Length: 332
Image (cartoon, rainbow, N blue to C red; front, side, top):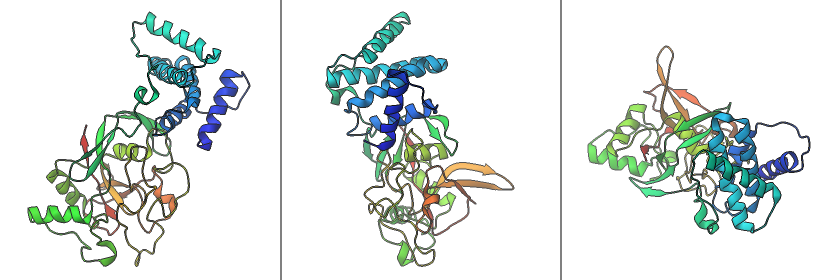
């Protein structure tokens, strides 16, 4: 089990089962982190999801405006624990009784989760579709956004699994007669399956519209990258390695990798290459003396700190740099 999740489970047990005094933490953030972990493929059948259910139950009393949301979450995971273990435990059974009474009093119908575990809850990575390259579904809902980990809500959307590649952008140029991008002949950047670079914000928009999509907002991009738990990188909080990302290369001599090159790059939603390789345009703009756009993700010649999911730089829309590319989204 992930060490951070193990630590949070121990915290919940100590405080809410054993009644010990513990150092305060941000319990809403902890709950979001635990939910994201237990929803990942392979983790949903871990009976220690009980501690997420207990924490959500307690938060239901602490955060009144989210009471129904937290109580629903609690019942889901406490029922899941019982379905997995078949065991009686007062810490679980007493809370389930209280939850059932609450829902009955308020006329809220909640499905029981006493079905086989694989049917009870789908993993976070819900769906992949093929639409000018594979796209991954990012479910709607709240997540922890930015360096301050503010709670932000977005609607469900699809996002390209990989950045738009040279091969895909070339098809667009040949079909429409649009100009080829800057650096097109640069050997270190021109692998057919490497991310396209040397495209301005307008270039990226034109491609997006051609395929019936659009550029992601910063919030959409970041949720696709970090999931709901405010993790440092798409894969979690572990340091970056060459298995995770293309980074740390010489600015003048280094170059990009094919988008399938890094087997450990995937985010909780199965979205890849969101750290390193190329910065990516977003639709989010900032107005100073001129309009500039937020770019996300870091690139092949950056150090690990610039690859953080909460990192943002800004670029002038007409910029055509060798380290900026893009990916697209569409509504779910």
